[in-house]
Amino acid sequence: MRVSEKRVADNTNQNANAVVEHLRAWNSNAVEDVIEFRGETTIVVPHGLLRAVAKECRDALKFNLLSDATCVDRFPIEPRFELNYHLTSIPRKAKIRLRSRASGEHPFIDSLTPVWPGAGWLEREIFDLMGVKFHDHPDLRRILMPDDWVGHPLRRDYPVEGFRDIPATYLPGLKK
Image (cartoon, rainbow, N blue to C red):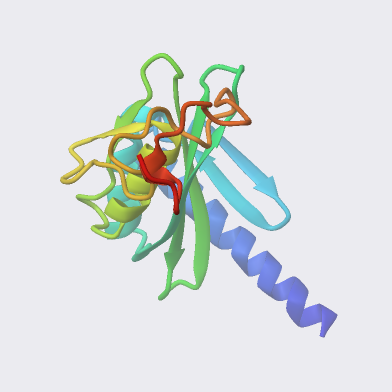
């Protein structure tokens, strides 16, 4: 069994290397860095090229599934936000991660909703909890927190104990 596990790991690494080589040949600025960790490949992409790289991955490299999108707050490091898009190619049996960074001063990045419509819900969650805004998103509004909520609760500088003046409408059983 160990031999077959090694073959699968080698095959995954070969697929990732082919993706990186293709992206570098397609646009020499498309890949800032490649991170290999525990058999997973992360391709760091400049934030201005994220949508173009995603389209290239979908169309030319057959990454037909966006399985997840996440955001990490690296406060106080700049650029503060790291956005990670997990892509799967079902025909090629390959997975990669596209990573792009956004600054804390102006947390804007291109939406991947035009490439994968399912990204809309994931990006709304990132916007709601982290405050990163997405250019060309068709419906960018809160998804988990109430519309009148102040702040973004998953940011590292958000108050740990929350805000003290919680309106009675958020506490069940209390009347005004």
